[in-house]
Length: 75
Image (cartoon, rainbow, N blue to C red; front, side):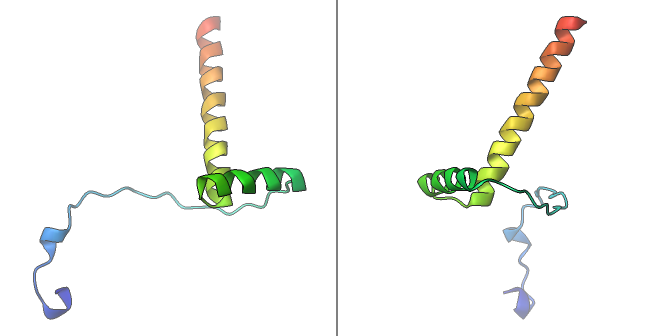
């Protein structure tokens, strides 16, 4: 359609999510940790990377919550 010069604007919502730049890192993991990650990834039918990112995000969120909670108790 667009290659023929037709108006395709009706197919776009102009709503989008900004994706932040990604930085690659290397992490050393034990064989046992990799096995557990792979088992969980297989159970959920997702990649090892998806499991690592999800678990890391959960841990960071929990850490942030506990820091915020301790600050409000002290103040």
